Amino acid sequence: MIKRIKKWITLSILGVLTLSIAMVYYALAPLELQPNSQEIIIQANSGLRSIANQLVQQGVLYEPWRFIILAKLLQKEQYLQPGSYTLNKNINPYHLLLSLNHGKTTQGSVTFIEGRTFAQMRDKLARNDAIKYTVGTLSEAEILSLMGYGYRSTEGLFFPDTYYFDRGTTDIVLLKRSYDAMQVKLAKAWSTRDANLPYKDSYQALIMASIIEKETGKASERPMIAGVFINRLRIGMRLQTDPSVIYGIGLRYDGNIRKKDLLADTPYNTYTRTGLPPTPIAMPGLASIEAALHPADTKALYFVGKGDGSHAFSNNLDEHNRAVAKYQLGNHK
Image (cartoon, rainbow, N blue to C red; front, side):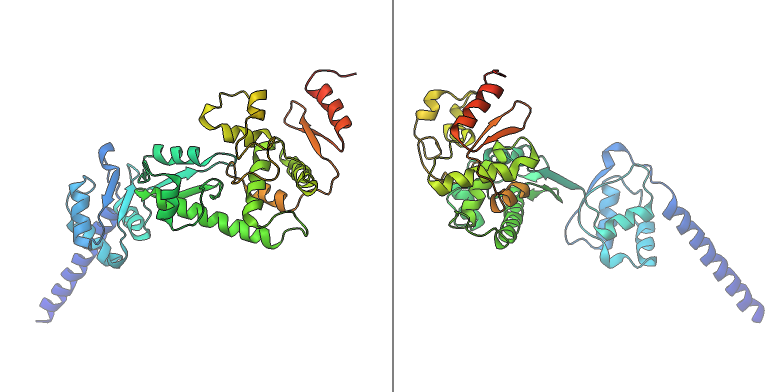
């Protein structure tokens, strides 16, 4: 009797050891996926058995039971996450289990760039195959209404950054994330703004920031450019900024701005109208927002491009005309 018990215990131990070795080997041996099985989808509300069967159906596993046993042994059964995954072609079952456990789903990304318009932002969303495009033919007003925001224009409301997301995320979700990021950045910057700035509210500061963004070629000059435009606002001088005129021209703009464009009145023509345009003209970055709220202490009222991205700043029209002659007309006398 004792011999039988000893034999049974010995066999049990050997069986457990054999199973353990087999499971370790299984867990660490590469699955050697075919290319068409490296992109997989685990459906929502799937239990362990269902997930294992989905992996079999998608060519990741030959059979489900060893994967199920491995998940149970490692106590990962309750933590497996649905989603889209990209698998390394030599991934092993253990790392596959960890990926599913940590929800390392395939991520898409989209980058919104400073100085771009909402139309360009919208086009980028439409061309990203990881994004579920839903805004289609909707107008700006309809998009804003769908998002629950009361602005009349979408321009400038979104913060330029790189956003990561699970494949299939809708454009509206990403727009809300970008909008919320802008609201946080703008509110923080507004709370620490310089005193006595000529803005009624933070939205006007955002409009100014968008102009600074479009006018700046050299990053270090943002506060000086802000200082020039703020000086003009304070004395009631027209801003006379070409980027706002170009924005007002819209799709008719062919790359050249002409005298007739400067004379044609639109809400965005800062040569014919005093004050800020009615909305931002592009998506400003944080540096331009900070410049709009912390401008340089300067008496300059003019600036002209030097041709290398930088500008010459002048306090009066005579100085400005000399700078124009030097840098724009080629008169270096």
